[in-house]
Length: 348
Image (cartoon, rainbow, N blue to C red):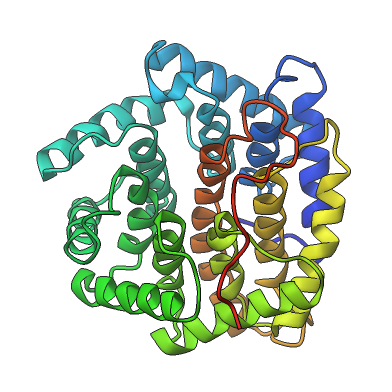
């Protein structure tokens, strides 16, 4: 992957989104196209060429998968974008996807539907090719360890985050223990229990902070959002967890997020709800991971090497937010602002 010059992330996504939308064929799925544009944002090709390849890859994935496959759903656009960005032949991806599903059955995992498909795509992205057997076993071990601590919440929707964690090669038991400490610490800080909080706790394990410091980091971001008159809802936990993995101070992170959210919100057709919020978080990560703690572009070889490794992992983790937005019901149709969810309760 070739890192983009700082500040170009939004412009690149806008150009890709417009290229993907140009023929009007996907007019009814604007949010999925936004996430597809983000998934291919590091493609070295120009936007028109990238968009044409994504269309062709999505068509091939759907044709090869059949009508009742996960890839007959709009998820195929995001998978196609990742395939294009990674320079993978979509026909080869489809063939190996079927085998990877079978490998997970042999490892003892029950079928996880579209979450499993995304988990496989993430593992392939992190491995930069076919999935090593140890990562298949690592995914299963990570899932089992999570279920030991949170059996009532752990389910197929946790497979993509487990794939990101398995890609780190860390001890699953120690990682699951850290995740539980994240979860309990956030609960004590006033966060609302449930699936969004568990995903937040899992994503925090992608960082290098001790659990107490990771919890304090998320809490500080929530307070900064409130200070900038943007109170958060519990469906925002996933996005805030990714933002907390950045090195900058909360004030800088939230300010950059608000700038990018305003840019994303200007895209037509307008969307309401989770999609734009999650996409702005994705773009903030993509932008600030390439900068130092003060917001200046990275220059040293050592810093750039570390940045590329983090960018590769975080670009996989941001894919979780496309399904998180879909689960909140905003990816298939335009939504009016709703009041079904409650903002964070209990925060000091």
